[in-house]
Image (cartoon, rainbow, N blue to C red):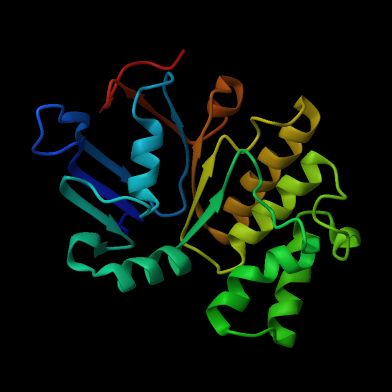
Length: 230
């Protein structure tokens, strides 16, 4: 059996540790995501989804427990190694696309590669254009990032998340700000990319219609895995 792309064992997260106000918000999370999986993460507001996603995305560290990405135990890594792992193995798509307004669509997609390499190369530009083509928006490569519709901007964001050929894409409400037609296009493109490249997707969503079209639904309730989706 292939090693899971993501594995959490007894992951807990507390705030104000050691103080009288200490609060535990994640209570022993056990979770595995198979390589190539396309999984929805659902749960009510305040359930701990955002905290869990921040830990999986290596934006925060658990108070205890073990998190492994592509077989690497993050507890054994220093800050520089964590940054490298996050930058090269994980891609992010947010509800608000977070494109750089002064950049073109192509420049936004190239940005992670340029940051890694230090300068633009022909290969980086070619990959950026290729990704925009895969998202169906190659004709907008030189458009200002904000001179595009919301759905087009989110497709740029998906292309940017794929730029470094990550093993795992974390998508936080990627269709939450879109109309139903644009949401369908973005979801379908992510699904197609998953099938094409084998990149794993973990999608946080409140849209149960979309969640049910994923391979699996993981529910977070009160800081624990379990319960039934709506």
